[in-house]
Length: 135
Length: 398
Image (cartoon, rainbow over all chains, first blue to last red; front, top):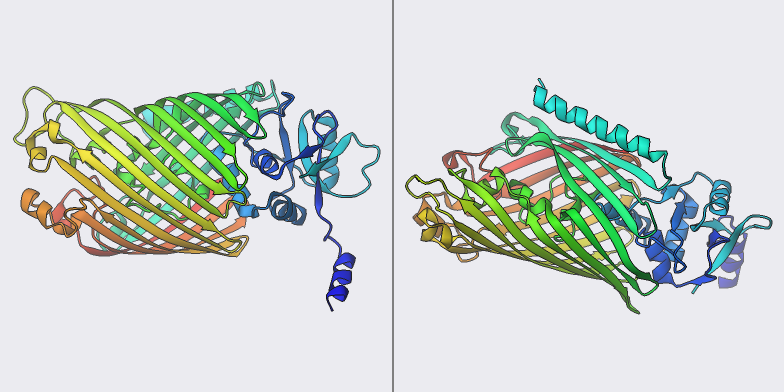
């Protein structure tokens, strides 16, 4: 029974997890989960090499966004939203840039220095982004 | 009708926004955010945010902020807020914060930074963004802790802030220390002296230290806020009987905060203790030179869906923890006992039809008048101990 369910899960579309992508100029290859949440919750301003961090996300009700936040950041989307609002409206930080589609995400991350975002793994050959391993 | 003065303030806001817009073209890392909130309050007795006994729309919050990141270490932010709330706030534009921030250390282990300017006071879970409806769990924040009647003192301080966070295996520790001059105005006199005496608070200083530890998934968050304020009262030469003289009020605060978050549920509780020493002022304050207030609330939120949420809250305030039934205050000052406490049941619903819109409705059932403002309820004898309130709110953000 479990094997059948597992097989069915593989067939379901949208079950693939989004992966973290960064601009190819970002000099790290992997990232710890706490640090990743710090970056996506807009608390980190610069990468270890000094480049400014630019965060790109999909709209808050987008399935890929909700799935990425739960699986990779290990918080619920409402918690991430609360973290952003508290920073922005107390003068402690800025909001992420919201893009409308995965295509736009890849495009913006590839041309923006220090950019980070996420996409559901697909063939990204030819674009100027790299995948970050989450440790 | 808007007075010329108010009109000029709104024009200033326009100039501020358009001025910042022109800078926007200079750099990409500049952004604007804002909010507009309209509330409605209806009470069967007592007044909250205007003449609520006949239904009051006299509650509006408007804010615009801008932030600019000129380099990877620097951030410049500012926000102006206009708040109209009955006779407590008149809607004039005020600079809520204006802050230059420098991130000194940043790594995958944590960070350390310093800010100067006008800085939001870190106090409990909600204070730093208390006027932004989207960050509140309800229309009215629990009044026993986030009392709107003395809000100016709680809003922001002119000074500096040191802050940092440190990652540990199980979670993250975040700490903020603000040292500076808290803002004071006539409302602070009403709240701490219970009336607008001749004279005024002409100086202030204080600090707030807030530390929070959160598990990695932010399921459990525990926090402590500790702080002290000193407010100098400057009395005129000729004083009324019982009036305060020159002197300093000493206020020490302690907040313990705890929150547990699940996908559909959040449980929040905060405890607040405030020691007030006003003996130095003399006058009527010598009758009870020191007082300690105590309050707490417990709140359950349920997210029915990503756009609809419900909450239930119990909020309790004792103005003097050694006079919980208010009889001592009644004997000393002749005030009705119910002005010394408040027990509030609140049930509310929130709906976000769109990410930029938030609509809320809530009902309160309250015993006691401890957190009602003197400005809206000047006559103690007209206050009723048991009362109910319905409030509605619409907010738009951009």
